Length: 166
Image 1: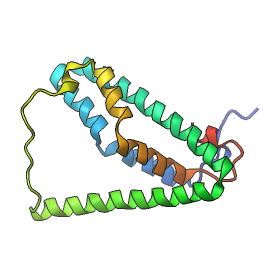
Image 2 (image 1 turned 30 degrees about the vertical axis):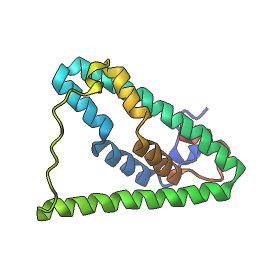
Image 3 (image 1 turned 120 degrees about the horizontal axis):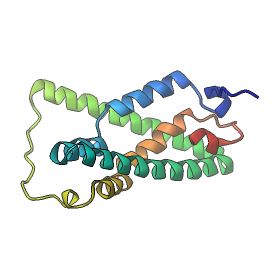
C-alpha cells in the first residue's frame, strides 16, 4: 500500500503555484488575523488562542461548504465550473490590482488617514471564539476568496473532487 499521497494523485493542478498561493494567503493579514492580533494584545495570549480556534472552525465550515458545492457543480456542469474558475481568476486579479493601487497611493502619500470611532465594539463583549467564528462565517471576502482560489487548482477530470477540496 502506498502511504505517500502526491498532489497529482488527489487532483491538484500545479502544486508549486498552489503552495506559493497558500503561503502568501497566510502572510497577508485579513479581518480574521487582525481580530486575533487585536484580541490577543487586548486580553492576552489565551484569548488570542481561543479566537484562533474560532477562525479555524469558521474557515473549516466555509471550506467544507465550498468543497461540497463546487464538487457538485463540477460533476453536474463542467462548463459552469470553468466559468466560475475564470470569474475567480478575475476576482484575484482585481484584488491584486487593489493591493498595487493602495501601495502606490501610500507610496505617493495621497491616501488619507481614517480615524476609527472610540466607542466600545460589540465583538469585545463576546467570548473570543464566538466573536471570531461569527467574523469568519460572515466575511464575504473570505467566502469569495475560498471559491476563487481553490477552484483554480482542481483537476476537472479527477473522479473524486470532494477529496481534492478537503
